[in-house]
Amino acid sequence: MTSSPTLPAFTLTRPQATPLDPPPLYAQLREEQPITRVSLWEGRLTPWLVTRWEDARAVLGSPAFSSDPTHPGAPTFREGQPKNPRGFFAGYDDPVHAAMRRTLTREFMVKRINELRPAIARLTDELLTGLTELSGPADFVEHFALPLPSLVICELLGVPYEDHPFFQEQAKAIVDLNVSAEESARAIANLGEYLLGLVRTKRTTPGNDVVTRLAAQVDKGVITDQDAAHLSAFLLFAGHETTANMIALSTITLLNHPDRIPHILGGPDQVASAVEELLRYLSIVHGGLRRTAIEDVTIGGVTLHAGEGVIVPVHVANRDPEFFSNPDDLDLERANVRQHLAFGYGIHQCLGQPLARAELQIILPEVFRRLPDLKIAVPMEEVAFKQATAVYGVRELPVTW
Ligand code: HEM
Image 1 (tube, helix red, strand yellow):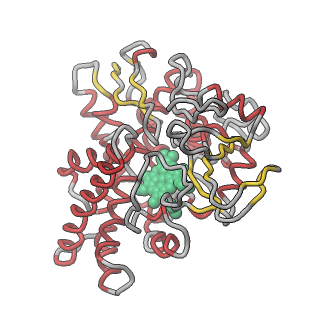
Image 2 (cartoon, helix red, strand yellow):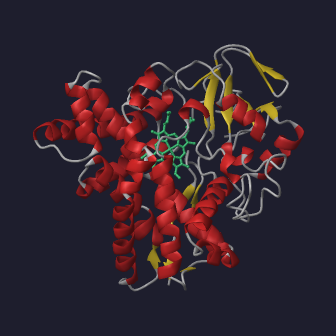
């Protein structure tokens, strides 16, 4: 992305020296022009960038904005992004969004997710045992950070984990911005087809899983079998890349702050607040949450007009010094940390957050308990950060222990 003559270009690229901080330009914009236009697709789109915490929350909580990426002014990642099926309901407004989301809310209630905790602990143990049996250095992403959430989401959905090379490939194509709009739509269709087969299988051989319960909602006439397939595909995708990246980046962050590791080992309350601070500090959805104004609306003293696109870069808003004191510090006891926007805010706030939290709360202490000598096996400058992806992370992380 290059800059138009007058507007700063929206960028995902961070300097090599500060890979865990948002690009420095954004701190300056937040200070000087907290709501400003930026250039996207070489200036063919000029959406608003809303960088302060308070304004970001106001946009995300307002019914004056649409999440539909097919609005003409919508600041999408790719030019010509076709409309996703409605099971991918993050890109729909109410009432479709609410109807689709409602089919899954029970699945992500804290009580239901807590029932998964023993399975998460068992899978963590098995994967860490497998890792330690390798002769190091080994890739922490391949052997732990990616398979763990993948196994957990498979268990929750009732998807056979043996098929993971296929669906991980599709999930990657959906978030990789170097992949064209057509290829990303193809990946969504592939996932949908795969899950449609599974929805049909679960009718004859039901299990205690989300796909079986979605198939039952089809039988009751609540949704179509295409909806059930796409809802499952969306979860399979959403539950993968995000948590995997969060595990790898949290591990890097803690290894860069070794004095904070004892805090992580200090019991459930300490872990819970530490996980919130890591979510805030890393705010991995660095492509930003994208909306289009559907009516004129004033945010932070600036009037945004109907039809104009808006990007809410949560990684920048979550470093706003007006709301979080010393925001660039990793403060595992930060008092107001729970008001971070890493899971979004408003009607689209992350449905999977109880699961993501449970995974991170179980995994992170276990990693540092089991691997007290864990180290990154290459200099930080050589760690392969994923820049051109909607969700920030690392491609691989060679470690020794
Ligand atoms: C640390 C991990 C995660 C992060 C940081 C994260 C972040 C987010 C964010 C920022 C949104 C809001 C998007 C928007 O407003 O446009 C979102 C939505 C969503 N997330 Fe997550 N997520 C994570 C893990 C998960 C997991 C594990 C699942 C499911 C298994 C999941 C399922 C969803 C769904 C279904 C939505 C759409 C909600 C809606 O539109 O109503 N996420 N997530």
